[in-house]
Amino acid sequence: MDLSECTKFAIENPVTYIATMDGDQPRVRAFAMWFADESGFYYHTGTPKKVWSQLSKNPKVELCFSTPAEGAGRMMRVCGQVEFLDDPALKKRLVQERPWILQIGVSGADDPKLSVFRVAHGEAYFWTMEYNMNEDGAPRVRF
Image 1: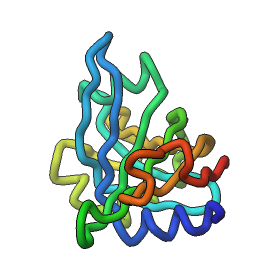
Image 2: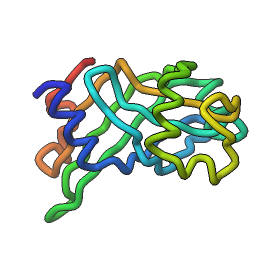
Image 3: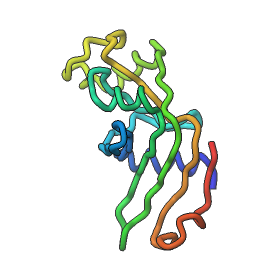
């Protein structure tokens, strides 16, 4: 197993549950992953949102992707740290690929309310019922 298997699974199952910390309280919400490649898993959010504040205070996250199947299906869990990317070209690409962002209060790629982030380094593994009682036995990918 390598990172390409992980990014392929993420692309095929882009709804991601992202766990953050709000003080000592975990918070989980669903995100629509923007894209994934060998450089990481990419997302965006708004700087006025609580999730942005939580990620700014504590960039450690866990991502969970899943696909339904018989039983509990298959999940991929990724732990790592968020990196915020203030890259004008990347933000321009985001607005072009997701123009609906302009309908939810963002004026354009240079709007300071728009934040792009990725998880570029960490560890990923796949969970199935095979590893239900032995999570530590699931093979890991470090990236």
